[in-house]
Image 1 (cartoon, rainbow, N blue to C red):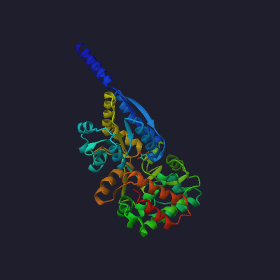
Image 2: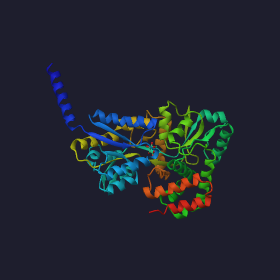
Image 3: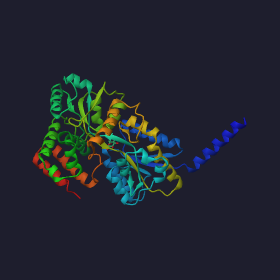
Image 4: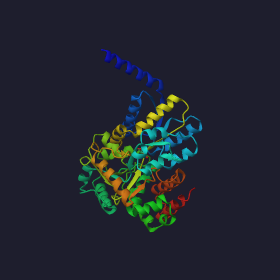
Length: 416
Ligand code: BGC
């Protein structure tokens, strides 16, 4: 009896303690598709389980361009959310503004330095202090395929080279189906483009041209071949592609209307949410020519400076939760990505995730691990935006010759 009442007392005290520090976290993100929303809900659950209130600030728009615009206006108005989905070099740009919080206390207590690959940890830090928490590792150079559609079209085996790909696409077209499900938005055009650059030119070319922005690589015959291949893919997309959201393109593959989609593994989140099984209903394969390479895309949340102590506590708990093993597992199972936290048990993950985890480690050793440019991992937002526009202009307007496409992209790469 005595023991029980002591326990009850302790629980009451504990609850009172956490209630006193319970705060609200407003989280800006762009995870609004089926698979993404399920993933975001897991973070909300963990935050709420710590007694805090989750204020959802979802801004629809794949790739996050809309979210970035909304975030700017909120920060300029002096009304930043507690956390926002920002990644890559953009983290540094926000940090320079002096608006980000130093979350070292949480990072130290949770041992982030020993739980993250150094290259990732460095991106999350500004002047040696953590200002952002990483969520996952997405692989961008994937090609998704519907197994039944390939069978119907008489395509045996998943294409491994661009020649094999075009032969397969031709068969799908002849069978009266759409070969490539594409969403004509500039970030999706660029997602396809960078996989073509990687597949046609290899990791070194990709790095020279799109990461180092080397003019020699950007104007080389390889670049010409990249643009020719890229344009050829367009011929296998449907007339309704312009403006289409990426998840609707994935739905075309899921629903057996289209054979292939070039998209990062957030697309797998849609297959998973639809109850589809990899290897049976759908195939995940590296985009043609890119099996030995890996374009990485690490999602992360920057934390903004807050005044209120309870809000700061909620923010610290959010940061700790993001890197916690419980969240890293459940979130990434839903999202299609792999955990960014090292030494995680992958037993519950499917074959696509296991392949991704294996390739992430192997390509890091061989030089095949490169940052995704389309997904803001490599170059500053301004130059990335200019190249993205040049790529989409080439994709959309067939009157732009390959030679002019090469020139325009090389010129865009000089943007300061
Ligand atoms: C993000 C993913 C997101 C995708 C579609 C990518 O840039 O990294 O988390 O699911 O865009 O919005």
